[in-house]
Image (tube, protein in one colour):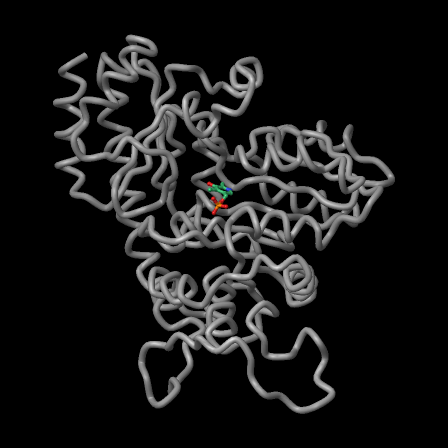
Length: 384
Ligand SMILES: *Cc1c(COP(=O)(O)O)cnc(C)c1O
């Protein structure tokens, strides 16, 4: 199974053959508790919060198969995956290195709560190894980066980050939400723990909240123990929908890769658009690295209209296919102005430092026809 291509793994990875009662589709085990031999270890009791019931184990195997990892754990949200993984590797007094362009929730969790746990952290630039060296202390225990950053879709020196962590005895963690295992498999690149907001591409239908932690058996078991204590377990109904979504992950992401590149190329040629950020464009600063590391450039792009904030808002109002909404990774295209939504919690100075200008528009490209998407943006640009 590990040898199979990602399309095959998405369908067959983790599946039970034969399934219970011969079922081709793994059912929802709703029961909260199961009888087990007396003397079973607490974490191996089959109880729903302990992440050990049949539907949960099935989903864990499916998640692991997709990332080519030994083990997987589903969590109640992407933030539960991130906080659980960090709590499983950091103790009071420990120091963490984190990429300087983080998902807003992760940024806010660290800036507002790390001190409560006795953790310290230093922002590093995943493009500049000298910043990693400079930030390293005797207390540094882990490093956390993102495979593609939001919303400028930058791609750092990811395998070097993992190698740096290994050389210095750090646990390496990566949020692979934007790239998905279809485009990038961090375990192969040397990362210990891969985190996901499964709310996004993994589920792909904008109808559940879920997260995932995958990696080697030892690190994932530690994360499961932490999750069992903190209680952020995924409900089997949401888990069922996630497993269903996973089966079409490769198809969806391939279509999104193609659509986003088509749209980015179209927008880059338009006079109404001053800047297009998409790693598939030769003009993107990380195009070369993304070409080497990734099998596809992803479904996310951001643009800056030539007419500033008012043109940005006009464009968002004028498109007919994308919904005006934050979030990402679903089959429907979404369009949003990060300064007003995903990054609204940040100070204007912090936003500017990251390049999140007020006129920046982010697009999560769906699986609609690329011709229809391009035509829709063409008519919308015509109104500017
Ligand atoms: C959405 C997102 C998260 C948080 O996920 P939730 O499922 O909303 O908790 C974390 N990282 C990235 C990159 C995301 O896009």
